[in-house]
Image 1 (cartoon, rainbow, N blue to C red):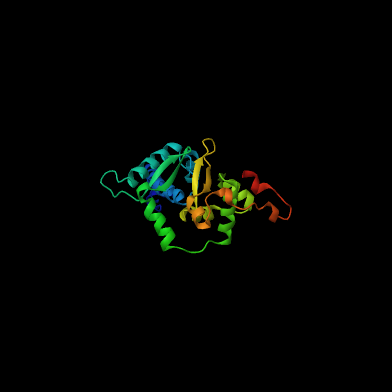
Image 2: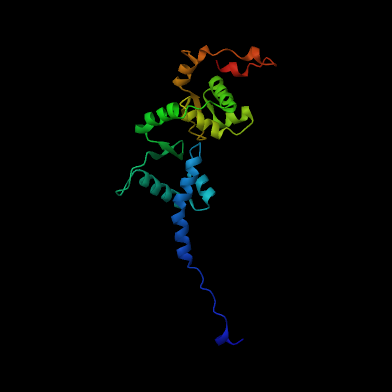
Length: 205
């Protein structure tokens, strides 16, 4: 073959540039995941999700945290990245808790769905309880419902399991106010209402 007449080959992409682009995209990819995550996400699970080394995830987390904090002259965001229970999660900054709570309760006073009411009942009778345990009892995914109840101020994060990183939820004082009771102990025993007479929900009380 005459090399003088051969078709010119397209230049190969610069592998260093491609790698740099991938690293630049990591913070945005992690941001998207963390915005919808209900539980703290560990570095290893995040690295697996975006397909990069743990070191790159750690660096990207630092970039995002600094960005949200307004480091370098940027705008300090109304939310922040916190490391809790061995993982990372996006939280509203404490100074904005009141305004967010007021907005949810007064500006968005929609009725709770049946799914939300059922989930709230499980939490009320079995608290403190993890999201996974709630899902097991209801046999459905409860991620969005738990977010709704948190946003309404009806439940709160009681604690985070130090070994699993799972958040355990409990009812908030607002629920007592809404129900007109002084304590969760005043909730009615429901076992007599169950067809099989199960004591499961009442065992915690």
